[in-house]
Length: 152
Image 1: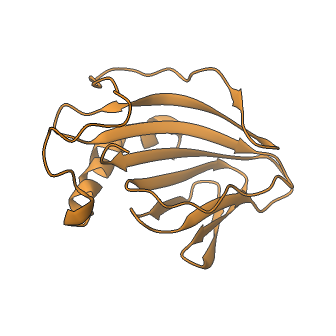
Image 2: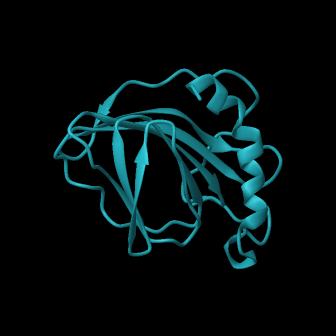
């Protein structure tokens, strides 16, 4: 699966919001995000500039905003980790994350267990799960992340 095929599957992935526990769904449209996000419209989104992150990490954002269909935040970015880079901090979120490895080998930690991911693999981290991802190979790791859920 290439990036175009993956991007064309995003609408189907949005259906995952139906799996969110009720307590994680916003109670009304009045629930505002800490920062105002633009409303997304159908279209084509080019990658933004590459930005350096923590040691050995970089990334670029494709889109971030709110969907018209409700109070659902959608974001997509690509992250790159160099061999030997430290893993991201353990995190939990109100949104779910879909991970798609485009090159390299990853170790995706979810709630105490590590899962090996190779090029072409997709991982899912549901809202509220503890997680991190690291480069588990000796070459560069790149992966796309799609986040879907309530405003943060």
